[in-house]
Length: 361
Figure 1 (cartoon, rainbow, N blue to C red):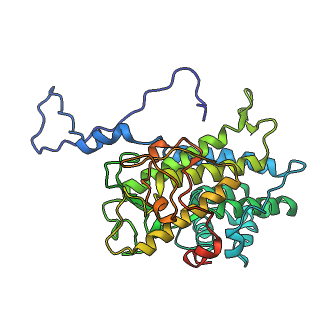
Figure 2: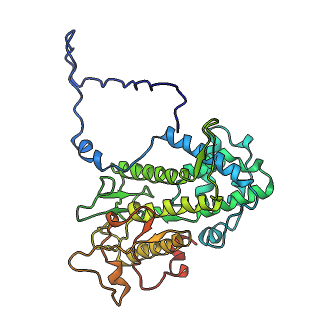
Figure 3: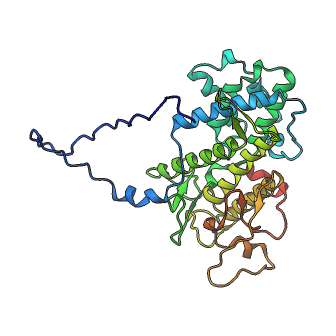
């Protein structure tokens, strides 16, 4: 976001750290700097790009303003024919209830909690590829209940599309056994019900990995979405670039959030270079890998590109006769470019009927 101030930016004031010693410093003596954590220093260069909450919220407001204007553009529509999962799960009134909320009901802390609760309950215990707080702030910023019915229906289709891409929280994460790190972390378990995590049964002391990667994911989504915007030099207002449709923006959110998730957030549990909790069965690992494959196929429908890069432990990978051989192929997040999904791990696409029970559908 551009700075509103003129001239040179003022230097940021930083509070001094409290000394760790109880010995009072003599007048005129410089205080010794607080020693930095060696772990933080070592991992700093491995971190992925992230923004703070204030900057994320400011950019979300920009996105909400542009989407609200785009909803009224002639010929605007959202193609729901590619969105399969959320239509099966939310057959009731949950998402329509969100879309009916007016600006008068979307003020204060309770309104945010209400939106979060309804949105999450629509499909519980899932990691949303497009962050819940981002969707919530879009709803609050747009106030769809104040829109004309045709525009509100289009926005409902937007929310349904974004809602369709999720992984069970217990399956979301990774635990590399070969030194691979993502954002500086070799292990990450998405917060989930105690004792149910596929990667870690307890997430105590491991929250920083999830928090960092979750912030990096929404940062990348916002960056790619705002690349579709122009900013007026005089008014500083944003608008869609010529030729860019609302559908293009939605596709970008889905593909960016999805490819980030499946490339840097949730690894296949069957891969030879990851280790799950000892209690996880081979069948459970295969289900997790097949759910990922199904989601990858859905992302392709929205424009995601499938990479041809693979990594083998000893020899070049050959197309095997059994799916299981492909499922065991090492995960190689470092080989994927932004917007890419990894090569197929199954001989043929996974059918929804094979995994629907494990998704609560």
